[in-house]
Length: 461
Image (cartoon, rainbow, N blue to C red; front, side, top):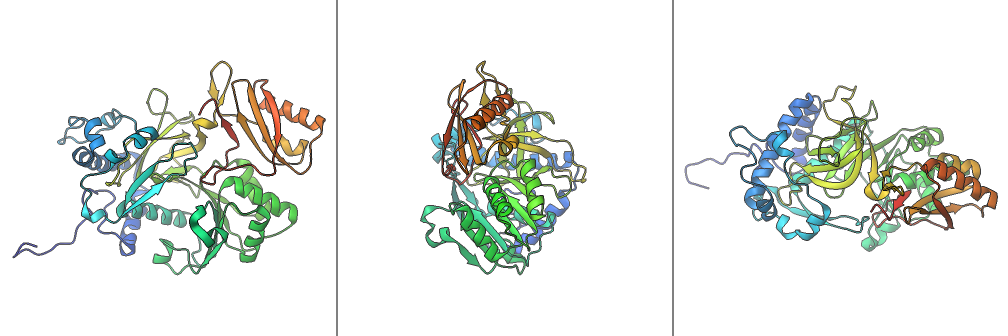
């Protein structure tokens, strides 16, 4: 420190202007949460203005310190005097997963701000066959945690309740994979509140054993994947088991159907709350506690839904999701095409200015390819399956533009008549007389990240 000068507390970490982040740690979480509480009610144009200010800071930093963007982003992208505009922003190139794999070293900053340390590393599950590693900072992770708390607040969760999670756990996690109990919910909730206990169990556990584990703990809150939740719901409904303390179910990682929401209400009498997230960037959208729409987390993410020409998709139409984390100065992912497709919504009736998504419909590999080359999101007729035969789980895998393999987990072998009825239902729902081959399994495999996909196209992927 220079003699004769006083040290001054930083107003915000270097490069971060909105939301302001004076420091890192639990003691700084409350000021960030206070900013998020106010920002959610800003009008959409004010949110975009603040996003562009933060994106300008991120872009300027990337141009100066990240080799990949030094090559990709021209120095004349925006006039510092007038700032970054949406028009200029949309001229930036799209970053694809293959770009990250091919340029991993050059996407790392050569001059990470000291105040953003320590760093962390996340590797995606590789469900697409293209895993990537992303470096994050303590600052970007703190914002991720702040959005976690926002989700708790929006849904008015009782922190004194017990939380049970059934999730994918790495094979090298040892005893954790067999189940582990904790006295609290962990970071960030336990650093801000005195919470109830928490327990975690591997998704690879048999469903009946999962049910036994849940019944023993009788939690107020359950967190898991939709496909696993569907299997649990069927088990509890058929066995007559109960979870009398259950208040809410939270889902991550997969699409949630209206049917699953309805069944959770019928079987447990509780609501289902979904979040849209990715391992690369964190939470992108949270379910509105009032309308049920997904609110984009504009204070931490720029989420774009684009058509094939790269233009914004209007509400009601499906487009590809392109996302930018606003605060990762270690490895900025700028206009990253996450390979998801979503449908944007209108301004929410709740009064929040945060943009909405009506639904996240899946990935490119979840699209049906018709013989004429057209692609669309498949309807499979699954609502009628149980009326025809005792089907516990199903998966359709498109092998060619004319052939689909139908995989079933069943309570008993199906009759020829049942197979023919199912064949007719599926072909009618898909809108084409595909050649269908039926295969039977004891269990259908999930991705390496623990997710389950009901439809996979080996043609579209």
